[in-house]
Image 1 (cartoon, helix red, strand yellow):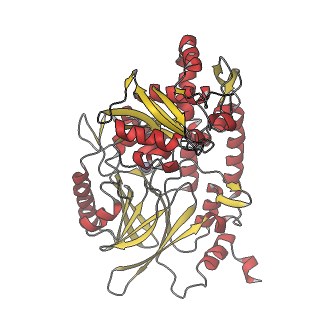
Image 2 (cartoon, helix red, strand yellow):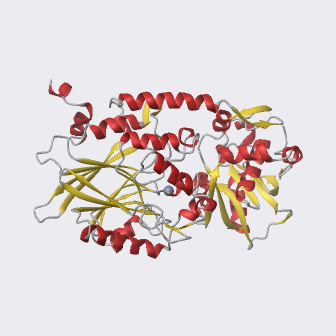
Image 3 (spheres, protein in one colour):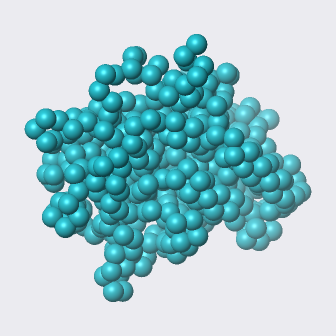
Amino acid sequence: MKTILCSMAACLAVLLCGAARADAPDLVVFHTNDVHGHVLPEERDGETLAPGFARIETVVDGEPAPHLLLDAGDVLHGQPFATAHEGEDVARLLQMLGYDALAAGNHDFDYGAARLLELRALYSLPFVAANVARRDDGRLLLPPWVVKNVGGVRVGIFGLATPMTPTSTHPRNVAALDFGAPARTFAAARKAVAALRAEEKVDLVIALVHLGSEAYCWPSSLELARAVPGIELIVDGHSHSELAERVGGALVVSAGEALANLGRVEARRAPDGGWRLEARLIPAAALASVTPEPTTAAWLEARRDAIAAEMDATVANAPFALDGRREVIRQRSANLGRLLAAAMMRESGATAALVNSGTVRGDIPAGPVSVAKLLEVLPYGNKVVAVEVSGAELLAALRHGLAQPGGGAFPQFYGLEVKATRTADGGLRPLAVRIDGKPLALKRRYTVAIHDFLAAGGDGYAMFKVLPRRTFGTLDEALRRFLASASRGELDAIDAAKVLQCAACDEK
Ligand SMILES: [Zn+2]
């Protein structure tokens, strides 16, 4: 049987394309973005959520056409596998897969710009960015582009980082860097396109960008396509979008998030000298039957096990039991909810913090706390986000969450004191709110710590969706740092604090 003889990846490509095409592509561009450390295979209830990088390697290596492998940013930080050694294991993996170019995502700066440069040097990572300069001497931090000769095609790939980077990683990570005003992003792109065409004499220009395509992304990859001519393909990341859209003369593609898809673009020379591009996303489920590349798979498993062992190490101490049980934390203020909120305040310098109780998935017994325990209780990898809200918006958020005891939206908070009453339908309604010891002023603006899920309007908190924001570290990192640094007196005060008063809600 012919299918047994061909490589798994080649078979898969044929299956996914429906039928083998008469005209083979001149070039295939594989792309990933916003992987956020999801490099191991992930499954839930028999469904493949992420295929793992070893399967991606099989597919890419098995591609018969000349090909490139690109990542559009946010790959180095996210899961414990990535964060355990500040991106080192993912960096090595990117090198093993032979990525041809990488965009610098905001979260690729999460360990600091110096660490990004260190990993780049250690693993020869081809990061590109035409719009990130050092403040001291104005030189570019990274090469603006790379040129690749693939199957006789000269491909120029230039990079762009989002000008939103300084507000979407911790500001201290990029203090020495200038990401430019949004308008300068286009100027940098025009300059790169002109140089690639005139000096590098490339046949095809790819913009590998971490800009995003949603309304909050400025400038977005779609605006880039409209504003800067001469780009055939824009490979985008940042807004976690699934995208294959023709805008102006360019095709703009993005493969979602967390390795839920592998992007694949076929490029064919047109008779007029231009290019015909065709994009498709290969979903994780379609990759489940691919045989993982054995060397990479074995390495991944060994590293996963080693990191799991490190995860069992003690990193903090809980002086008393921290209650995060579902039946408690979704009904009233729980000490783990208050402690988490206090840790978020410390992390961000905010006046108060609010978190939906669905974020917390268990309790922490008194005594030594391991990394694994922190991640079990806070499994989502959410990041602390500081938003500027009016008193009215904060009150709207409290009303929204308190109305739904039993649900994941029910709020845990600190830096706030709420007197509430029980409504006829069993919910709570705030009667009086104090913040920072004073009555909440509806028109005043306050800095409040939430997390990225709520900042995206999650759990119905739509009032947090459009606010200016600054992003900090993950919740588990914040809680670990707080447990290690807070005094016993501070922790006891949080344990004893009555931040939500209501006769009916204090009942045990
Ligand atoms: Zn991003």
